[in-house]
Image (cartoon, rainbow, N blue to C red; front, side, top):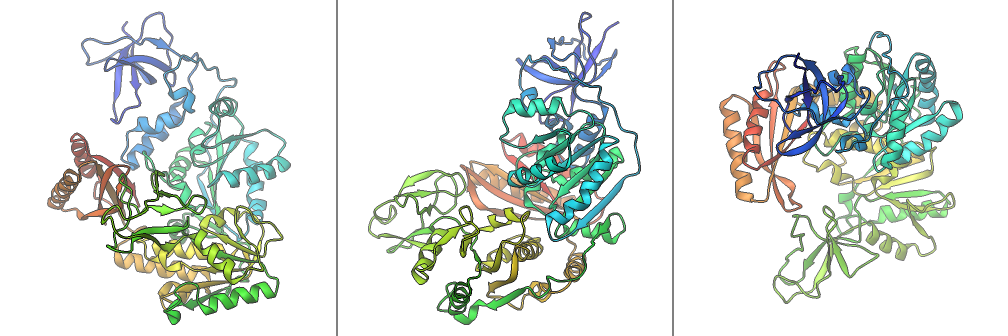
Length: 601
């Protein structure tokens, strides 16, 4: 009898392909095989076996790589569920569940040491643990880890590698069993070894991608600092870890713990609906009135380095307090312009301003593609004017403050120690949230740059950012803003739930997430006119189909790595409105050579 293998390939189409299985070969779903496709040999994953096909002439399976299945029905179902929510084929997600070495065209044979048992399903449980300090949250969820490990595996997801290394040490002190780590830039051999040996009753610790390496018997998933932007994957397939974890938890019927100093607005909305349990042991409000907003417009002549700021720094130094100054702008000068014609120097591959670094002032660097060029002696446009810097970066700010306070050594956050009195940092300082309070006072000079972002989420993100900064301080956070009466600051020192309730109310009135679904489409091509024309065509087609659509808008930066970018926003207010026609039209545009990215909110 003819034996047919339904095989999925790492392609951008959601389709399985039929291949004939030679009688001499033993094949099971979940095994990897080598097959010919489009005149090339590719690695594929067997989805199922059959004795029926509509294909008249079948190609044979060239080689069976594995002696046992590496993926199971559980993995196939998870990939399918993700593909039902995100506009990408299930094969994209399925291949993410294999270590990089196993995705490559390789004849490396894998033998899993243990049978991959499936844990008995229980009732799906969702919980958010809210406490300011990580160590306090850890003391709660580590008990859940110990309980879950008696039944199966545990997956702990962290936003960054710096978190992973610190928390890994804690886990090794509290748990005797081996901890399997997964993170980007990990040596592929180490990652593969960890994957092979963590298929049953394992404690897994890693960054965003580690969720896709879950064993079939996973009983608990933990996402620490769930509001972190690092949980969103910025390359295809675009996804958010929280949503992926919710999909997997529903499928496995296990427990998901979201943990952090503050929940996302999506999570808080689910808490209000009774779908997620809120655990908040400390409701004393001890951190209220810890943030002071100072009107920057009172010092028009001194926009940032104003008298009040300088006096606060002097007072901090004289009292021998530890202070941190936040300026989230890297490099020395952010913009280089001509003194004669006003021309600004931009990257030729990107539309971003070229910037100057302190360590090499003879070069300019693009912040997007990192391309460097020599610093021109005169303006390349008018050939007359000299070039000068505008909009200071953190390196320039350090130079200015050193002149005001020569008696104190200003340290960058990367080099600071317990003896440092004054430290400069970008938002990178939030990497230290797992530590105890390190500074007495903080000063945020560029708050408005967060609020001015073209993003409906800007106010909420700024709230989380400022509140998390205040957690690093023993005393007070000073915020300088030209909009002290903005509604965010009305709630900044009140009980956190008051801001969340107000934000949800505003979003409901304005039909914004989490009450509606927003699809952001980014089109890219090296021909600007072609990109815009296809964006306008997509707008007209979807408008005729009664979609609420806006755009096309120029993305920022408009040109990135040689490609022009335009975006469109599609709002789905009715939950019953299908998004499939949107993706169908995108596939038609893709055939014309236009690249697209889809981001869901």
